[in-house]
Image (cartoon, rainbow, N blue to C red):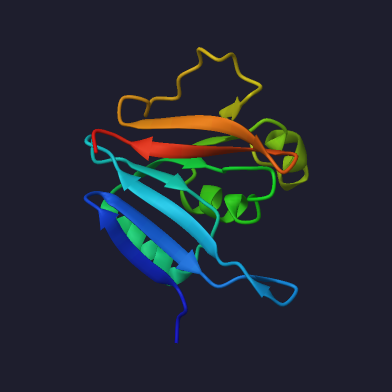
Length: 145
């Protein structure tokens, strides 16, 4: 039985949750998929791309953007990029160097790219960076809410 939980939390915004433990501490993984007004899909990819997750994302539309949120949330980027090779891969500063051995090519890096850089989804999703626990992370706000 799958332990993946997929929910539409608000219109056109889904969360994908899977179990994850660090030692004996249950933390969980969470990805977010947003269906944009164009019909394209924006995915914050930090959960395994299991069959259930891929089928749910595929039902939303073509994946155009794959993002990671921090240098700690990178394990499944290769799986997502292989499944959606035409999607833009965008990460946080330093992620391209960290994933170089996997042959991933990033289309952008928050914090490394000029602050004025746009990636194509900013009319519908705002992201921002914060330094938390010695790592850079970004978060999102779909709008209008």
